[in-house]
Length: 596
Image (cartoon, helix red, strand yellow):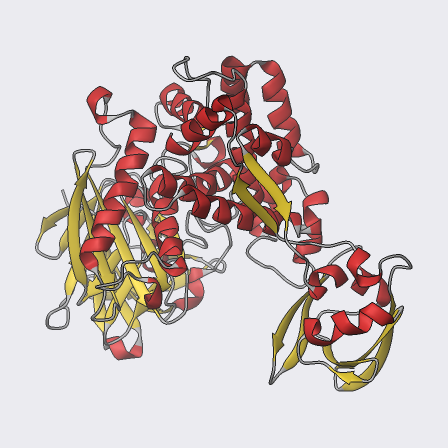
């Protein structure tokens, strides 16, 4: 039986075009086609059809007209049942994990950016073949291969869930949970330490497999994929990842890669390991265990859910937690990472405006389109969602308050595994989460989680962390934090306001995003702390000279009558540290939490 088939040719890679040939056996009399407008895992309509051009159709030697129906749909009126062949080009120069890229050194694509959907035939097997590649180029993908350069998917959804990496790349592999894991890396410097990256990634994978399926000695099931592929694109600047069922596409600065002979664990490398951990966790949490609304995806329009706090936020909790559990970072470093997340959320006034459920639903219009007012009106379902996971985990773990050797209390691990088992690794709803939580810890805990998700109150994390022997302190606030500003500062360019936070001294005075602060009380400004701390010690009013849209303005700011700038409301960073000589029960709780 002839299959729907796509041939992908590299048409002069340095011009950044893929040439696609789509062959449809026995087409409909009026055959409709469309290109996705978004890619699962990145909740923004990216309108991939804007990069498509030159679409033409034929049956045998007969050219057919192509009618465009809207921004991403077309139809062709066919004559008879002979194969319909379509040719088109895709411009590919987005060096990200979401779309497609092609130049003389490297190629990468997601099917959602290149492959038209054949309406009415989505459930059929689909074939993809690659044309001739440049000399020494290789191919990496998890799409099942049927012959050299030929691949086959069970249906259109599966076709889109297997990105392709093309080029001359470094590669290595390891085994975790009895499954082969491959790593391909483009753009690394010669000093890159591949063996260390493989070794550390293996630890991450083994730890997460154990979290989902139990330790190897008691494991009754394998990971839910036959193989797994990490595709990492090392660049000068860039960061992110996108999950797939059996692979992930990653992008990170090449300076963050481990270097040969480098013993220390740099902050950049820890960030990369956290990214690897995050995307790997998604192979369970969102690719299989998923919102009920995502059971059947519509690629042409927004797919709304209120559950991204769970699927992205809880994944964000586990990414760094995995690093300490598998021994890649120590307890102090983990608490430092956790404090960074806390600081970011608490410095965002939008947390008191938008609930996590609302933030999830609004991802399509707000999260991926930030502006100068974003911190005042929204909250990140990644950051606050991770803190919600922390609050849930600590609440569950402290409920029974066991001593050494006692039966372990419940935990977020138990909740995640229970959801996986009850849904058989499939779609779930908020009601499913709350029902299992009620079974684990009682209806009061379920109601508390519901209130945290749909309300805007701060989470009770200081108290919860104290129960685990973690001390909470506030760092000294900067001048920008006391004024309620987020700024860019440099000795050459001066001080540029990026954002003005709601309810702050700066907002009340009338400062705005985009203002360039030139001076204050007769002094030139290069960095806020250099001058304003001194001025505020003796002055009750700050007179700013600023440039706004090429005009010079003077704006006054009155300091609090008591305490001056030091008394101003702050967004000071949080500092977390282990308590010295905690009680034995507390020490046991903390070890159980961080060890898993």
